[in-house]
Every structure is written in structure tokens, then in C-alpha cells.
Image 1 (cartoon, helix red, strand yellow):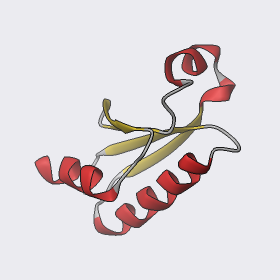
Image 2 (image 1 turned 180 degrees about the vertical axis):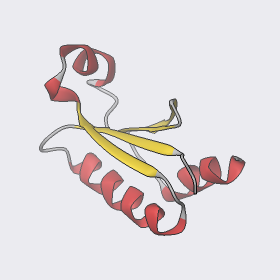
Image 3 (image 1 turned 180 degrees about the horizontal axis):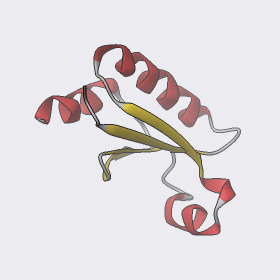
Image 4 (image 1 turned 45 degrees about the vertical axis):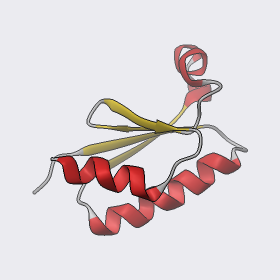
Length: 81
């Protein structure tokens, strides 16, 4: 059982976020990880931190990619461990 965690920081009406979520859902079929999605608009702190960067993918607490999310980069990160 794998305890890896992927967090996707998103916001509403964000086409890049929708695309990133699709990529993450596809990866979940291949890699075992816990998934959390966080809307940055629910927190002033997160909006300030990620406002221009979203979507942001964090794996095990490490920011792996933001903006244009791609499958290859995320797969490489999962294969590292």
C-alpha cells in the first residue's frame, strides 16, 4: 500500500485546472496515491501564494509543476521513489 499524496491546487473557471485534473485522474489508474483537490479561492493565503501559478501539483509536499501540467513530468516524479 502506497501512502503517497498528490495535491492539486485549483480554482473555478480555470481551463488549465480542468486539464490538470484529467491528467491526475489518468495517473491515478497507474500509480497508487491519495488525491486532494484544494480550491485556492477558499483561502486568502493560498490565493496570494498560488494566484498566478495555478494549477499547482504537489506530490508528497513538494511542488512538482504548475501552469501547464503534463503527464510525463508527473510520471517521472512518481517513478523517482
